[in-house]
Image (cartoon, rainbow, N blue to C red):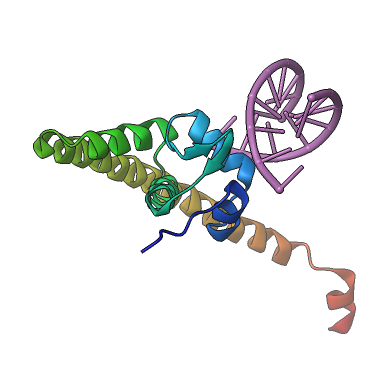
Length: 134
DNA sequence: CTTCTCACA
DNA sequence: TGTGAGAA
């Protein structure tokens, strides 16, 4: 039942980040690997945590937010507070993305108008080639 | 190979 | 939020 352990590089490459990044996360307090002397030893729990960190990032949360959630999850005194906190953050992120979505749709609309305008302009200024062909 | 620190975007 | 470089 010996648990598989990892060095920074092993864990990092396995999860598609650099060793530098993993150390960076540790420095920020998101990871707390064991130490053998001063070299880091990562256990499976660290790997799980890192996976959670990376997922949090994909969803657009800051390392700070991810750390808060991880800490709450680890401390785990009253789980209600934990879920409330997560719900709040998730809802905030959803609101943020919806706002961006609106802005994006608006921008796409403007670009489409401009595209049609440019297209019409192109038709007015017929190239010589086309003209001679008639 | 690993560690840390300093600078930089 | 990371990276690059240099030193140990």
